[in-house]
Length: 304
Image (cartoon, rainbow, N blue to C red; front, side, top):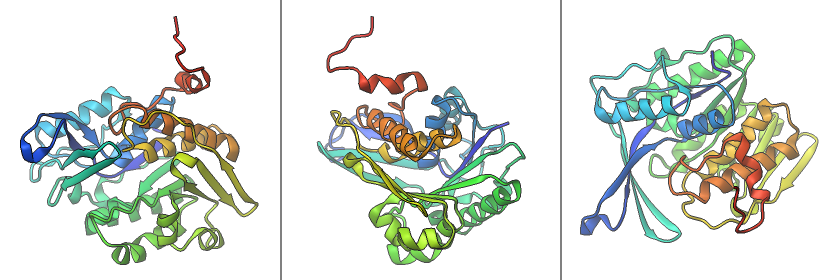
């Protein structure tokens, strides 16, 4: 049985080695905010289940095989023979600018429904993002069902706003995401994303237990009815910033599950985020629990 459940779409990712328009080679992997967090939590020693849909195709097999290999439980996922697995294309146009193109319209993930939501009595934490409701009515209903079921079980609900402008506008997203955010125990987002769902004070007034603001290289902050705490980020060489927010979320939620206080939760989140940006890929650089202390080593350290 899993103590953590995540819900969303995971796609096959293709990362261009050069400019797509000129013809180039690609490195294939998988990508999805919720599965990134699932992998991050699994590497940190937590039992995790991912709920979603993939096509009955080879890309779908890659998604499931990768998640299994990372210790994420996917036993309830049934391949969809009526729709393909979604695709995401990454092109690093400048050293610090990555262009992202989605090919997910009509994908298996967009056919997610409330019937795909399986939560049992052992779940302690449900993690959702604002990406899933953007995929259509079925995925939106699945998110609503997951929140209702988590409430029945007394599980903590974590919600990362994760607004994707390529999927829907802020004007369309706000009326959908705001009620979801207000039903969560923990809300996570950048400053702009939190403003999209009413802002820190409005969320706390609505009953959210803690609101976490991701500040990029400057670290993160957590606001509760008792006040705000901040923690600085770690300065590391940046290989790829994609997935850093999901890594932070995994670290923060791991510390929350361990019963640590706000300062420790922010610290673990910032460490996980630093590992992620130092490695290319959405999730490949996520640390294990034993690796978290490596950031404290001096530059050029060798473990022998």
